[in-house]
Length: 292
Image 1 (tube, rainbow, N blue to C red):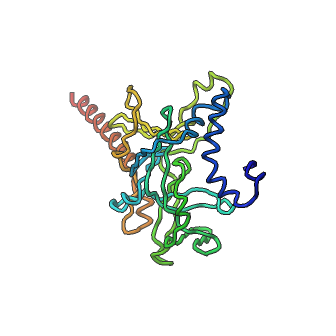
Image 2: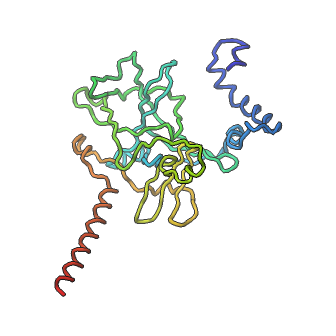
Image 3: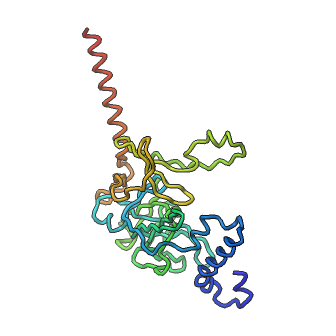
């Protein structure tokens, strides 16, 4: 930006958007050739640009939360495609509301990957009165779209939200619902200077996990580099099979918000079922002992 300002202040952001990739690539090549410690593998791989062959998926798990594309949601009774991202709109930080269209995985050299969400954004420009907030409920108009030329965000930037029909304002309006997911905790990262303390640090401060007890699979998404992997118990890590992620979405029945809030999470049902089975076995053993 400083170099562009020396030339002219006209269209700074557009010129930076167009010229930055080439400048970044040349800059990193020079630093790499000079042996600069700033030219780390991650930055150099980004500067080298990704493979032209990209992978598209309709589902993935990010930080323990499952996202589906809008196309997949339309064919199911669950909703997992709502996306909320904090972004810059004419130098003002606002909330962008949208739906997930595609999960794009880019492959770089040195086995690096970047996971992007391609989204469709609803036009909630504050000057156009397409967002209403009475302090209790926030409603948005979903008829108009914007930022169609800028649909991509990092998967780690996205928060999951849900849209509920607004019977008061009509079908063009949706009530935005933010939900605190069960068994997902926002744990702040802990920074220590003692290596021994780092060794004993709870891994949940670095990564978010979701376990499937029936298959001994642990889903893992690193918050920094967004690498999607899974690891079987006592096995080597492998790429995540995003096509076959278990559906843990929230269910909507007749747009009933009460049913939406009270819907039981499948994982918890499994846990309760296992506990009941164990308790039944214990009761049976105790009855046998008493009979003998």
